[in-house]
Image 1 (cartoon, rainbow, N blue to C red):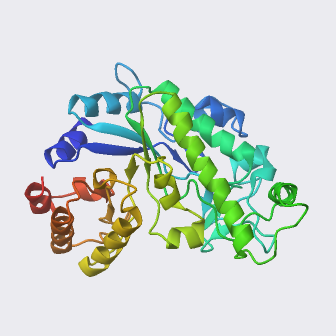
Image 2: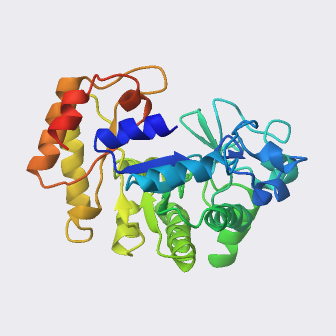
Length: 337
């Protein structure tokens, strides 16, 4: 772990986003997750293997300490957010949260489990119990590791598939707030769509306020490009930044060639102009997936050069494997350090 941090530090990386929430497990042993799931023991809640030995016996604490000794910041990254599963339809038998809270499942206008692109299946992002669970999980992480520098949310929180909201609780809540009207079957209906977007906007504000109430922590969001994010996952991030709920904006400018990247980063700057300083924008650049390199060195050189030209002083990379694995991008990192 220390060797990896040394390599990242030598390449000019100054902030690490550490995944702490994925596939119904946390990087730490979570009482909040235990209480809201069918896990039997607190050790079951963590995706980190037992057997790690150090003075603290806590790999997360050791990582934070060593990164801080190098002057690097640590943000906890709640990668899965409101998402339950990928490529698997969630149910009470394969999801530990639904096993205890079956009513947490998001339902689409077809009355099937709501999902994005038939791959990403969600919990009900509008339900107060689901929202409170996520807030409690975030606050628990801060209470366990108050020395961290901030919290990062992905394109899955706050977010919801565009066709979601057809569960009993959300329907009744809409009726309560709209003179007994039921949600239209057309999930693109403007009034119904905006009502749900506003619920997620309110949650973004709540997240920011809860985190700030615990200390001077950075709040970072990494949504997709707007308006795609709005139309598909109801992420209205221009409103989040206009409401001062964002300290770092890592829009996922995941493009594999320079001209496409240039187009989307210019769109991002257009959507943030006059409401978010460039110093708070750190565009996400994709180097590769878990098994495939997606960015050649020459393209990365052009992207980083363009960011410098338009006075962006930081970028975020997905993900660490392609920085640690070899020296393929060595010249780019040294050149733009």
